[in-house]
Amino acid sequence: MEEAVQEKELARARELLAEHPVVDGHNDLPWRLRRQVRYDLDKRDIATDQSADLHTDLPRLRAGGVGAQFWSVYVRTDMAGDEAVSATLEQIDVVRQLAARYPADLRLAFTADDMEAARAEGRIASLMGAEGGHSINNSLGTLRALHRLGVRYMTLTHNDNIPWADSATDAPAAGGLTRFGEEVVREMNRVGMLVDLSHVSADTMRDALRVTEAPVIFSHSSARAVCDHPRNIPDDVLAALPANGGVAMATFVPKFILPEAVTWTAAADENLRSHGLHPLDTTGRAMALHAAFEKANPRPLATASTVADHLDHMRDIAGIDHIGIGGDFDGTAFTPADIPDVSGYPNLIAELLHRHWSEADLAKLTWKNAVRVLREAESYAATCTRPLSNATLDSLDG
Image 1 (cartoon, rainbow, N blue to C red):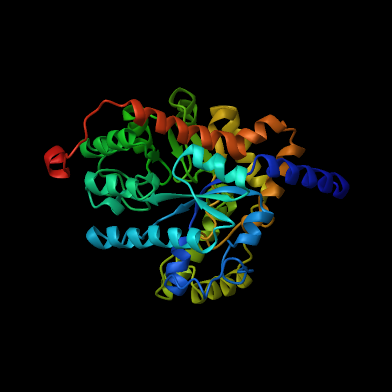
Image 2: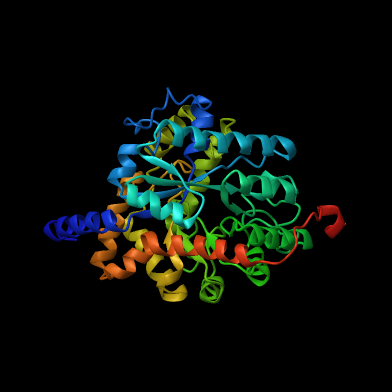
């Protein structure tokens, strides 16, 4: 892009985001706060510049035009059973702590109306999504309790299978959803919790779309046809979204969007393992090891154009009413060169303007689609006559 054109489109992108801000489907700040400072918010005051340690702080959220954020209340899959449940509760607690600490900037949001009210007040709507069905410990009662605490989506799996659903990055076991997994989807529909199909296998995606009676989301997944990674969405699933009403929110994680980055990231992950660290570790020691590895092995760089390639394809297959944005900031060690953190969304919108996306389509991408999908999940729950379920894993799957 010529510099003068780029500046003009960047200025227009900021104007558009002031009117139709980004609803980002997934940000792992709560987990970073747990890992880095054990929720000591004085040590990570996000009202100030935290770029040395985090992708996210309030000034950069404002600079990025973020109007609503689904904070991930993720816990790792090596936490199991009641440990996973209690850790999820602690994650929920820190989101509430953040909203209470920064009331001029953050507003807890539980409904689509809350999102619109936050926007009208000039505050960032703070929603929550649980990442991985291990967080409910095979309990529909726990699922309902998380919903009452404000969790508005649940990703059915994370990187590993659970007893009732297959993950995209584990060997198939259930073949998709089990009978209990299907019951989880129905109960999520009944209470108004969005079914999130990021991280799940393609068969789990298809099973969930078959069972659900409310729209689904992909909180942070891109197009498999553009980058052939199992974390991405196959075209047949994208094509099914219009009938379902769901929204696929493109992610920025380089290893999911740039084919050249897939092999490089696998080697970088193995470097962490060789030093006794988990591949998802983003502590200071892990990032220092990554930096040394990257110096010796230059990293293929994703850009806003890389993300736009996915969005172009997702729009072509699913339609403009069924796409959104889910950056996965603070949940990844690496980010696109020109979308390095939550301040970078204007660069993506400028790239899409350069590709002649209309302002009406951009408003759907950033704000309208995500608000609509939550509103439709709420509407289904309000009219659902299905009785509450107390089914168990053993009773349905034996």
